[in-house]
Image 1: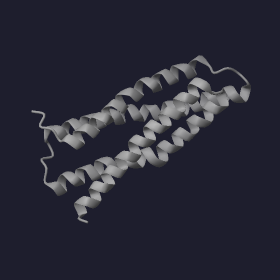
Image 2 (image 1 turned 90 degrees about the vertical axis):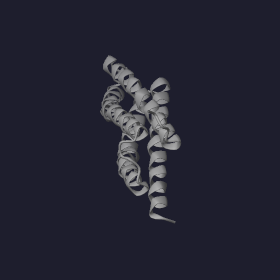
Image 3 (image 1 turned 30 degrees about the vertical axis):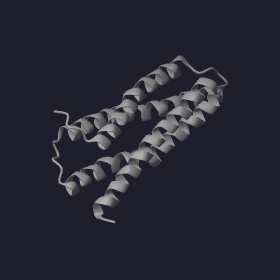
Length: 157
């Protein structure tokens, strides 16, 4: 196995962890938000944030590191249009993900307080979750597009 094969394997593995953790935790938190109690929501949000720190963040760092390493090993032009499009979409996904983590932390805090006090979820919680949901879509679609670009490596211009 060549160095290129090892780096490519790491790149594919980290993309799988990044995307799989993201969609899995988002699905779990959204369903709990729609169907669960405040204490269940707090637990789901707490676990989602933990998964983000343990899996999403390291995979998100590994992606550009292994990606640029692959570009260098393969001798591709760093400014190829498909790569530039990938960079932009990846940055878009990151710019959506970062506030999502803080929204999840706030949702957990609000749900925990509601559960602890035996109160309904406050209006602020619902605002937080609407923002969380809205930011998830561009990140999700952006990463799907990056997958497509990585597989096809199209000539865009």
